[in-house]
Length: 86
Image (cartoon, rainbow, N blue to C red):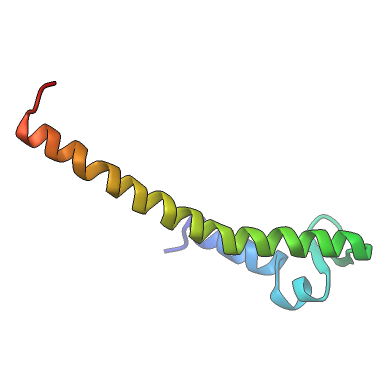
C-alpha cells in the first residue's frame, strides 16, 4: 500500500539527493532543473562553525540535563516516599 509517508520520503529523496547537497546543488521542483548555490567563504565558514558547535554541544547539554535531573529527582522522590514534613 502506498502511503503519504512513502510519498513524502520519495519526494525528499528526489529533491535532496546527496550528490547534489555535497556539490552545493539542489533539484528545483518548480522549474524541473538542478540549481546551484553560490556561497561566499564567510557564509560557508559560519555555517560550518554553527553546524559543528550544534552537533557537539547538543549531546553534551542533553547529558548534563539528564544527569542533574536524575540527581535532583532522587532526594525529591525519597522525601515523598518518606513523607517528611518540615
